[in-house]
Image (cartoon, rainbow, N blue to C red):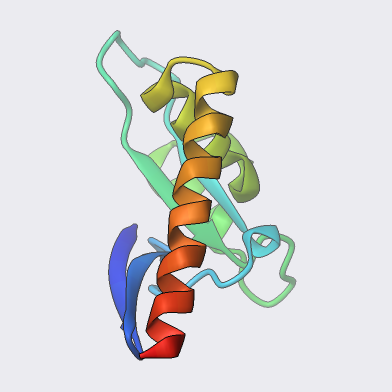
Length: 114
């Protein structure tokens, strides 16, 4: 799931594992899953999982079995696909991301000066 989290003076979205509840701090350690079998034209719920590849407990495998969600993708691709859906194409996505990144950098500098 995605939740807003306050860290010091900043507040921003963070991704948490839908199985164990821990924050996924590195996209390399996470995946997102969705159910495609029997899926109609209605949107499918998305589940986030951590511990991909862990030998102790694979939340990915647990969620896959629990929700019959056998379609998955690496978490680092989620923002790109979401951006494409929101900004109708990769060019607009990248332009919007560059604008937002520049604005965020400016805010960090302003807060550092305060």
